[in-house]
Image: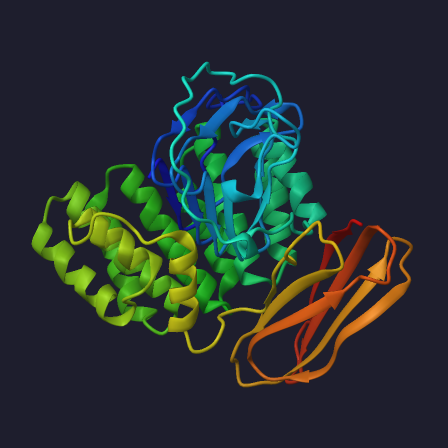
Length: 414
């Protein structure tokens, strides 16, 4: 694998100076691996956006060029990347595996290979076309703050992220915001991020135990980066004991403990003990497979589409409300829409409607009470004109609380 990203990691594949400047061209080359880039569990890779970044080459990997899983709600910016295609659209859907994630890879780099790589074609692995999704509807307020970060205005971005953190109630989004704040601190050369977590952010989260757990995890990550591995281990062991009922935190804590003991503290016995805990409880999880490779149990992680299927089948119920991008998109006549509802002791009132670009209702695909689980809906556009359509998804817990709302674009072509 060329580049593996996990747990809200935020790599910049661009020339991004440490302080006060927007990213320049990347000129990174990732080629002739099994998978070029794999980004999972809230990770967000920046490769190019508008006039910034770009000029990276990701091609001739035998599997997918880019694989993304479980990054719902955060569109990764991969614009102006060379995917080794010489005619428009300069990429093909077989380059990507996308599951509960969204990539913005258009426009691709349209000139010759910017890094002058010798192109030695490799046999392409079979691809699951149903995995490919369109770009997710973005949070415009969050995007505007992110743009400040892209332009090197890290201190302004921190202020914007903190304001967004106060207002947003979506925990996945709030975890992402906290990770971006840590990234801004690192990019600006400022220290005291752990002080910000302990003395400011954590004090305002007294009623949100799960997010407090994530701040402890971020603190551990920062301490490990500073070489304070023993202190990082203390934080991670706290997570594994106190948050054992929170699947994501518990998995993250065990994974990080294995990594630190194995790679930094060189204590293979301790690492193996924590790995066995993770393997016993989550045998088919992506993290378990990653550690199996690191520990030499297997040679490689299974193909992305196989792994996503295994993880999904392993879990009894979804962890969060989500609607996935329709496939295919663009589509001719028929397309498939999937959504999921978690088990939190409640039913949901679900509305899924399609509108034309003028806001006129076209069809109602769901309108009623649903139990937790996975759902698939077919949309037939055979009697409609070509153009852009919008699907609007609303899931309202009957037990109360804010509704989950998403709007996604679909392109019908005939």
